[in-house]
Figure: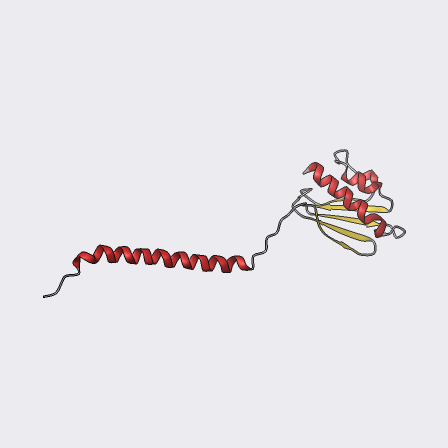
Length: 137
């Protein structure tokens, strides 16, 4: 009569197992390639001031990666600077024209007088904030 296929069961099982592994590996490569195709890698080299918005008398400096206070603090003059100030508020008030400072966990708001230009204040303020962040955090 005919030959029996009973002896080929293990070979067939091994063949289908290898086939499933190869197909799974191929699917993984395709999906991995598609997934990394549009991936944008963001490298944060120098955390600090993320962005800044300026109006006529007020400028907001948004901080990236830092929480500098737990709650909001407002300083309207040098007389309100606490003895525990680590130098940030005092340094900002040392700049000519700065009238008010509000410090939020990730935001510093400065109010200046009308006679002072933001063009003269912007870089010194950024320098003071970055220096403070790098020396304290």
